Length: 399
Image (tube, rainbow, N blue to C red):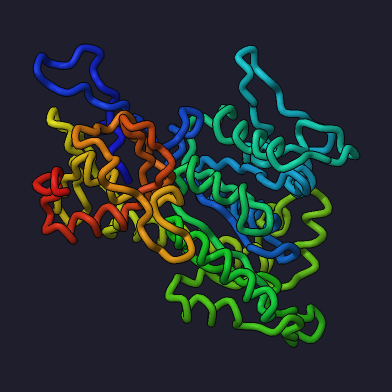
């Protein structure tokens, strides 16, 4: 991750003879999430695979392992967590400064649109209004200090997923699928989406993986089996485990109690606990590994952006070369890939006005020529640095 302490706003009065430093956001996450160590999205791409059930039980399994856990229900149109956690008619409270206080159930603090509206009231909102509520969940919930915040995502790969990837600085994502081909195909798209925005895929969970008869002990693969594990192996991501198709899970969900709590010695409860343990291991492995994500960023007095990478390499990017390297639709033709930016119209003395992290995969840069629509992915920043021999500032005025 970015070293947040080293990415600081400019001093009000710069030293004489130096350039004014741009505004560089000190945090990649809003203050409400600053006390959360690990933010994990639980996604499926497809509805009906039991993602909300997995989210609730995984949250409780982590709590049972001694962690402070929060849960965000990001499904605005079909919230499930108030029912899964037995919140009944409870409502989230709103503080004087317009902050939301989560509701606590079974040792898990959670927020949901279902805690803000009457139980029988449908959410009939257009997308922009729904996205405003997601932004409230990101920036206006008092989560405090947490080891884990799980985010129960809605199906699909749209606005909600992209907004959370950009604004919440996700530690990673867990992909939930069932074994049949139709679910696997959609889950694969969800997995690929997270890869494209540089959110690590922490693993795949195969839900509804076989039904074991309590009378004869025979297991029947009602929805096939092994598809999730095979997909994880094919796409080279971890497989976190399988959750059986078991009536205990359904009954516990209807009672508003995670099965890990209501039937702790049952087969499904032990399966969820095993998935929680593997998730911890994957996060620890990810933390110890090297990723294409800056560990430090600094803006020099000469206006050059210096980026330190996990392998120790330091790249330097001038404002002029960064402006020429923009890949937004105003600078690159989306169909042909042809460059449409006229370099002659870029001022030689252009400067960077502001730099903001975009999730865990890039930077948004605003320039003095009023251009601010481009997102520079970390892969792109490293590539243009290596393409110039690691000395981008030396070519600043090549025209």
